[in-house]
Structures are given as C-alpha cells and as structure tokens.
Image (cartoon, rainbow, N blue to C red; front, side, top):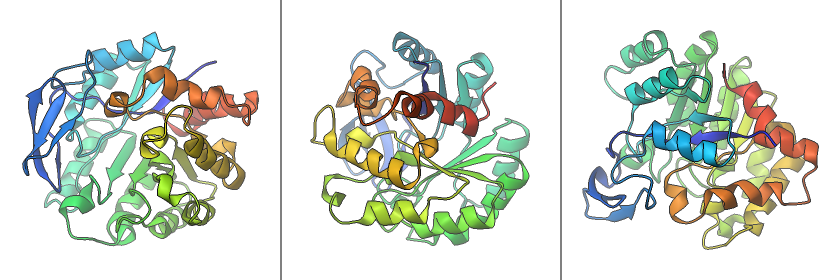
Length: 304
C-alpha cells in the first residue's frame, strides 16, 4: 500500500513558544518552558534538540512512506526557512507549509515573502488554546482574524491548514472554519487532528455536531495525533477508531487523510502502531484505506 504522511514536523533546533513562554532545549529530546515545565519532545535515537529533515526522511523511508507534508506550529517553533530548505532538498518526498502569527505587526509582509519568495503553496495556522496562537494571545474570533488571510490563500491557489484545538477550548470554533470555507469556495481547507477529540468527548455529541458542520466540499481532515489524543488508551486505540468511523460516515472516506504528527507522538507510540491501527481494522475497505493513506493527500496537497 502506498502511503503519504499528511502531518509531520521538522526543526533544526527546538525553539517553541506558547502560553508557557519560550522553550529551551535541555538535551535528551527534552525541552523546558519558561515557566519551568519540562516536556519530552523527541524520542530517543531521533535527535537531542533537533528533528532534522534528513532524520525525518530516513524514518519515513524505513516505514514505507512515499511522501510527507511538513506542517509547522509554535510547539516546536516556526521554521519557515528550514522547511523551505527541506522541500528544495527533497522535492520528491516533501511538500511544506509556511506559517506566521497573523497578529504580528508585519504579518502582511511576512505572508507575501512566504508566498512569493519561499514559494509556499500551503499555509498552516495553529490557533489552539493548548499550544497555538490562543495560548499566548487573548481569545479571538478565528473567522474575523483568518478570513482575510483565507481570501489571499484562495486567490493564490494555496491550501489552508487549521488546528483549532480540542473540544472545550476557547479556540475550538468549527463554526468559524465553516464560515471561511463557505466564503472561500475555491480554497482547500484542512482541519488537523480530526478536531482533536479526547476520551471524554466520546458520548457528548460534540464530534458528530462539529463534523456535520464541516462536511463541505472544500474541507478535509487529517488524522494525525488521533491515537495520542485518546491517551492513555493503547493500540489499536478503539476510541480513536470510533471517531474516525464517525468521520467516515458523516464526511466520507474521501475527506480523511492519514498522518502521524511526528516526532513528539513517538514518545508514546511507535510509527508502526500509528500506521497499522487503521490498516489492520476491518471496518475500512481496501478502497477506503487507499484513499485515506494516499489518494486524498495527493488530491489536496501540491506534490510534484
């Protein structure tokens, strides 16, 4: 089976920033936020304070992955120049996204450079209260902030990727994503982590309600970190599979893209487990698996 990982991260140095402040690498794959919290970022053997695109490429090839989408966020730190370098070095393997804080003073100038000089055909924005813009900005209306950017992305033929966090967060605004998608019908919109539901969300109806809201022609979902978000549930992550099956029923298998969110998720699960929990599940047909693992990402993202 051909495979595309629709959600990976690479970085030359840990330089994250979020509500806990800036991250300082302390070795052995760990980082310390400015408030003193220590978190394991990179599993043993994959880097001390970096997860390079060379290491990422090797890991992907070892696991039979043909291509990957490099996305960015403030958890590891923005790395626009490095992601652009990765794509230039391995254009057959990687396609990459640019990112920036839309509330920065020179946001328009940054967007123009990322688009016209670095050549990004994807823009990714993590707005989540957990680790994105809303962790270090006061809560804001995602539609109000991002609709002007979405219109630019639409005009420039770019894909727009959004991580709005998990149910219960102030950043969880699926209605805003719906507004963006409806007002920019030619824009491809990808929502990360299948809306990032946890175990506690299984019987609340919030996942079903949000998926119905976003079941639109120009909206897709990546399945990265679904197993991580239902922790401490173990392989084969039955609640994660439950959410994916709901998404298949509501949005359709055509709208789902498999991905991992490496490297930090590998501190809890192996790449093999993250790959096989869907492929080994008999609720998906072979045709559906082919779409989820490969064809849908090939349709959405601008691979060579």
